[in-house]
Image 1 (cartoon, rainbow, N blue to C red):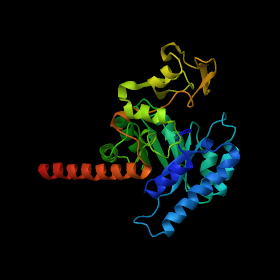
Image 2: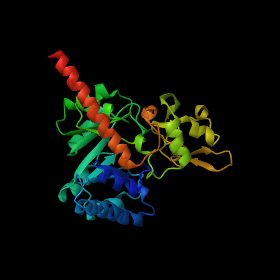
Image 3: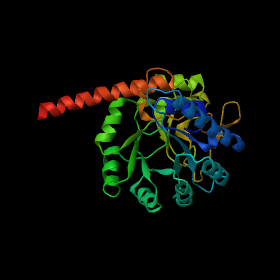
Image 4: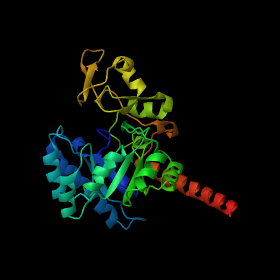
Length: 308
């Protein structure tokens, strides 16, 4: 999550047994990226040396593969030098990234919102696809996850990760039942103690329901889901913003006359916010997800037994 995913959050997620990820752009200035990667790697190694109840999961770094990302060449060099185990790419076919990451044995997953994008990523040789479906926080897709997962599974037998409105263990089971291998969870971790988000942002997520989420392409030029009340807080009327023809992260004017920016001044979240009832540590969130997942699987087993 842009800005929100801190190195501390990623380290705690990995130690809790799930893959933690952060956009390379969160490390600022660019010279900080190497220290972020070293921090997460050292936290994982220290956890594993302590004979924990489970090994730490690997981490992932998100790279925006688009000409507008002036840091791409630098960040890719750093990621490859540190041999990040998983690289997540978005916006453009990741051909050169795939080649370089595969050279050291890493894996590449690519965000896709349409079947056309999925085909291009497959042709580029990615190891997995992240299906960004309707309702996902931040830059979002518009396809129902049931339809999208089925269409992708018809052409791809690699790793499929489902994104969009997944905030509890039941949704993880549902994602796997539809044919995905893993679930991609973002919004739930905005309301974590380790997230780099204002308390007001975290509380707004906790208080929100799906009805409080608005989708607009007026902010960055791409469809994205935001908390409607965050627009109100800076005095911007989302209904009066026209669609942007060029991709940018500045838009409109705040009430104080300054330039409003995404994601600093308006805050993203997915439609799954209604399942979030409080701020907790990353470890506690993962433990709750695991308990909900086990409960949902037990329920499915009862259904199977009744049908047998």
